Length: 377
View (cartoon, rainbow, N blue to C red):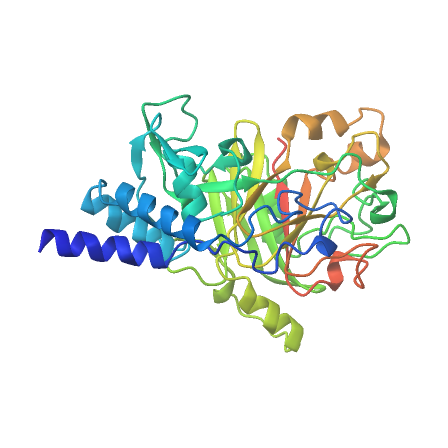
């Protein structure tokens, strides 16, 4: 009975392995010219031969059969839910190498390739998520091999092409504290101030400094729901997540009947994870579709323009750097002295991009988007 259950788990895991060929996200037309993640700009993995596939299957089965049954169940939960369900760490020896043909792989790398990214070449392309027990540890004897406790790192273009850029609007002050997003002649949306006294208090009262950011959800030019104050180190923002808590956009009441808004809303799915870490604020795309991010700290501080960055599913990007943001604040700059939070805002659009390379010039034309306003006090 013990062997039968273990064998069944191994077979289910193998059936849930990552596809070898790209799923349409590796189209080079969507890479390289819009400030996106460059990690998937070329298709590394081709179609494997029958011999290689059989060898990989035999190797994977032999490894999985040595893993404890409870660990297999946790791995299966992570793989079948595609990271939607909470799953435990899969702690295995970090210094065990496996050989596939002429290629040698570490045990974690092989499992990441089999169950998440078949084109993965090295663990340096990955970032460990805060939920992982191995997070922040250097060379531990046991390392987590759960592929959904990892994300791929975004590689940003340097320098970005000039035709994909547009004037930087975060330096311009808002016309009114009670206004929604306003499109300016410079192209873009200014800082969107919250509407209502309670919302303003959430940002302006210095007595409560426990929150490190607040999040506003917008559908086109209309904000939906109240500001969400974030105290925990990480926050899940999602439409539909099997397990988890956080900012559930699916529970917000919206009067927007636009077919495009309703379609994009359902595609948010697992959404994103926002986490404050020692080196800054990271955004992890947990959904099945790209997200688009604009942040003052993602670009050259001397630049007068900002770039919208495309982040593919499974990728992470350091969306905000507090030290860089502080350096943007010039004591003699009228805009910053009058509006101290102006450079402390990140905009994130689900599924649809905006800017010079898209039909939507301003984020306020995007169906579903977020505004993350950081507490710089």
